[in-house]
Picture (tube, rainbow, N blue to C red):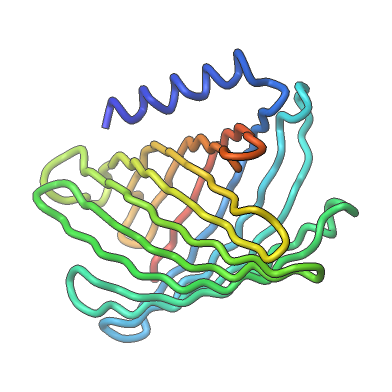
Length: 225
């Protein structure tokens, strides 16, 4: 896990030094509320804001978008789960050059938890619908969550997070776009129903055609009822 933090730091430092003209930095806070409907079926609601703080080789705080989403998850057994989601992205309110987006998501998760570490594989298919076009995006992520104290993450304790994600976007009128993401962070279990997380994520956007570098600082509050 320490190596993953080092990789994120090294990559983002390199971006700041040699690729400032194609570099953007964002702050992304979110609040997530989840609750169980039955023993193996749950709902999750999320509100997330994206704020640009570095673009065009200058520092400037500007709201880019606001996302509202809902996921329904069915747990099949102790390792497998499936989910469907719907999300609406508000962008027109913050820029006349952007369009609002409706996103539909289908998801499969396979997770294991040997000892103090949880490994998660996630596959997602997304349909991203705007007034001018529809695109299809496919995502695979591998995430690791490790308790810092003992075999389980108990109340009052912290944990580390690391993830890698590869994305492919397809539209009828453009070439395929590929994106790679790498992230690392730390979380705290405040109480039985509240977690806080701080994650840094580096993204290589459209790296086969029009390479862009993006740095995200993500802060999250997860509430479980």
